[in-house]
Image (cartoon, rainbow, N blue to C red; front, side):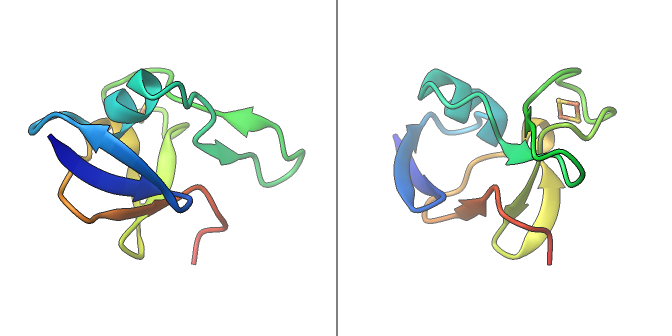
Length: 81
Ligand code: FES
């Protein structure tokens, strides 16, 4: 298993798994908040098109459904830099 961090919480994942899949398996469905209304947003298309799953991973904005987990990766739902 690989361990990464989402908003400071340690998450266990299988090698090759996407960040979105690992977070869903951990029971985390809301990956960010919408900028206007602050409503929770999560994975929708699962193929990199809708951008609803966008997170900040090691300082870079990425779609979580297309991002493979890496040991020690720091993922945030926070404001995009
Ligand atoms: S779920 Fe649509 S881009 Fe990730």
